[in-house]
Length: 452
Image: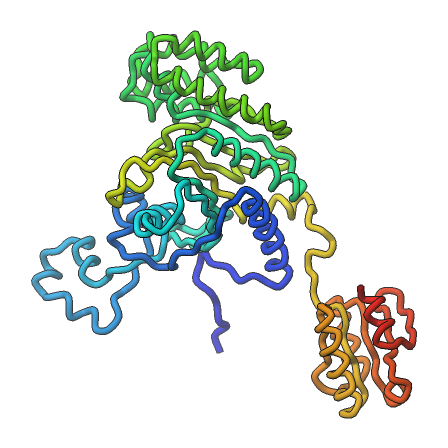
């Protein structure tokens, strides 16, 4: 018989893995709520008209499409098969798809419920998303995103709140991190002052490799992309930017003096850093011009968080966007958000062994019995203990005591309450500490006190 399996790029999670994942999710949620963010959920599937065209041509290819129910073949004629493209045929047999991310469904949600929600609207969302990507290490076809966004305000105080959320989440998880900060307007200003505004993507892609390939190779790549030597020469003070955040911003003010948009980015960044100082943020924040994620939709601040004690990519990222809901006919709604990478955070906590010892809080007490009468006795005690908030199991049948004890050992249950005729006659149980092996005859009140 063939052994069952799951689709490539998906995962099962054991009780231990679920306990660890819930520890991450619960920690993140509790911090989100501290700042007034409210949870929403959106359907696993959306209309394809909602999803298509929002992620670019490559993104559209990675959408999981769902066949229409019923006899979907009726929608296709032999003429269509001969003449239509794959895209045209798909539109005939599939009207829905699995969500690719949480951002587009959020934009649809805000637009759909614009008259029912209070702006600024602060939401968080922790749900799985699906991408028809090629599975590989660290990349899955089904994975969770933990997003937090505020829309309907231009205030840079929102950026401060996200920085504070990052600080508190990783403080609670015990992970040392650095928050990298940049601004799309600064990058636009750089491209403008060197006279190559239309090559902003080429410039930022090359700058992004500075740490990996060095200054000389970056300059070579810029020249290969068609930038004139004069423009590359003008870039050198920016590529060599160093010092404190204040010193970097002062250099940028001088370099970007002729760019209105660039100076606007510098001042926004200064304001965010001033807010962070006023709020006594202890998180390490570094102005990093090589940070150029999401240039096709971020319009202001850009964030990226990296763990300092492990070799790992970004574990949190986000930024400011000015027209999230414009794709659904509701223009001019600015917002800012970040997304926590649950899978990478899981790997960091595992590598650094930072999970609390009691993260797998399971059964606290198992009742082990010798017969049916004892089983009935145990059931009554178990009900009373559960009413007190304890996690209790009753072994489902009076098996050999060794088998019941083995079950408790395998599930790492700390206490076993043994019930025999003598214990019943005394109105007590024999409580065994599974770690020390110590046994004592206890009443219900004493048992509650010990478990508490």
